[in-house]
Length: 156
Image (cartoon, rainbow, N blue to C red):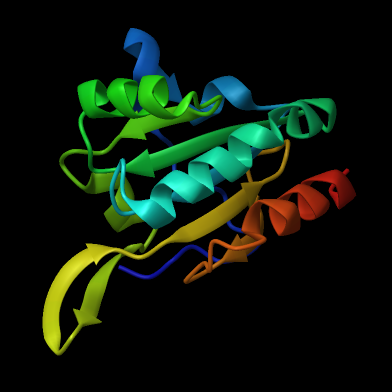
């Protein structure tokens, strides 16, 4: 499945998240949402990305923006990741991969000549009406949270 495009309504999310809640994107209408997909909890790039977003959580909150990370890890793994790394972001569990499919981030990857399916690191900025305002496909972690924050602050 391909990624949604800028201007599309963001595919609905109704998935379990840390803290024992079912996360629903519809519940955040009226706020901006940064939805970032990442491969796996407690790996170097994913940890850096989550820590970078967490370090700027107040700036995101001040721009009325919620940060939500998604991977195929279980809620329990997410909660351990949050506790171990002192994270301030919400993490949604997509164990069955449905959300990754709907957002087009479940793709063939190639590492050291080996091909396999996995989550491509990507970020979506969703506006107050639930439309996709910006997409960062194939994210490079260094400086990414700064770029996303600037875009969130610029979005009305």
